[in-house]
Amino acid sequence: MLVNLRSILADAQKGKYGVASINFNSYEDCKGIVEAAILKRSPVVLMATSTTVRYIGLHTVVGMVEGMAKSADVPVCLHLDHATDMQLIFDCIEAGFPSVMIDASREEYQKNIDLTRRVVEKARKYNCSVEGELGKIGGHEDDFIADGSDLTVPQAVPRFTEETGLDALAIAVGTVHGFYKNEPQIDFPRLEAIRALTEVPLVLHGGSGLSTGEFQKCIAMGMNKINVGTEIKDVFSRALRNAVARLGDEMDPRRYLEEATRDCREIVMQKMEIFGCAGKVGGAVI
Image 1: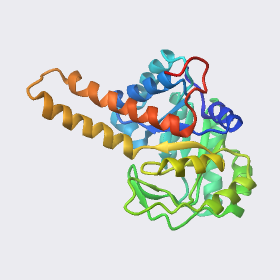
Image 2: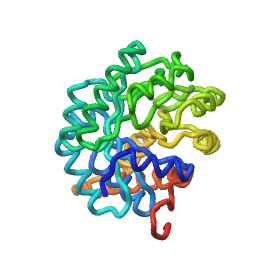
Image 3: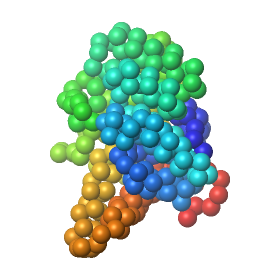
Image 4: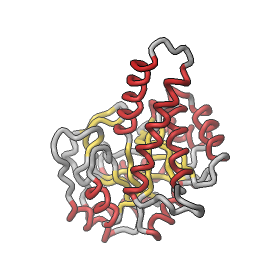
């Protein structure tokens, strides 16, 4: 069933768990993510970046995920991740995305508020949820790079959430997009301070490469949407290379792709167990 982010995160807050929010880039990895959610009886957020929307096609993405969600007896949310182009965001809302992220974190504080509020006002007309960002999360995400030096200032959070009316807030507490070159330095006191100042669900970006303990500490301290992207790309591409090397002259492309789907499904199932969202939908956990 296709749902918006607001409903998924409301349940996550009540249940004190994190929702696996996974970037996809094609039909095959998207299929593996949904299969993982069904098998683990878990809600799931399928995240498409701006480049993924351009690569697959806006209406094709919506139609593909709507079709998968109709066949899934678990909550599925299609989410536009880290978008900076206002026209693209509005196009996604109108096309049927039940959730979008406006990332105006590179703008000054008031402009970030103004842009985020504009998206919220548009989204409300379509029952679409909105995620915003305060502070700059480091690393390479889609088609832009940030150094991560501008962490979220806790005292800036209440006004931002109140004036924008957003449904979820991505915060910068030391995680980075992409694989970590050094040990992650998560500012847990900063996270604790932010959580004490707002009831809006918090989002952890830069999840690829964190340890189980780091994930679970972030969730215990109030993170409810946990993003993973780079790790899925790595698993998918490795599976394809291994399949090509092993299968040699095989002409059916599905033989290669089904292995990539399988490996994506397996890693997402593992994340759902770590994040605590496995088994949160009625039915037996496999």
